[in-house]
Amino acid sequence: MRTAIDTNVISALWSGEPASRGMAELLMRAKEQGGLVICAPVYVELLAYPKATRTYLGQFLASTGIVTDFLLDERVWQEAASAFAAYAQRRRASKEGASKRLLVDFIVGAHAILKADRLLTLDPERYRTAFPKLVMMP
Image: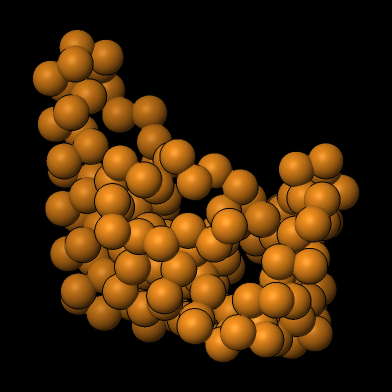
């Protein structure tokens, strides 16, 4: 069972946020159950974390066994596009105005649904509407 990881999980671990309690255990369990993966946009967001460097990020990923999927195929982009378009349409129909979510969330969700078996995130509600079939790691 391959687990995709959202940026917020790793950044919360790095900063020691209260929301990260138990995340190290969850990551270890997920690794034992089949492996860990991040998509390229998560890598990019992690590199923007304060004081993160390519060396630090590379060492962290290697030490935790997290693989980076830098090659996102057309299916991932099409899935992300469909989910983002549906989200934008819902926002317009509800008169809530312009989109508030970032496109990267939809790429992370599409990658997780097509290239992994589940997603580990600190914000599962963010993904449930756009990707109702996406399994969240408890």
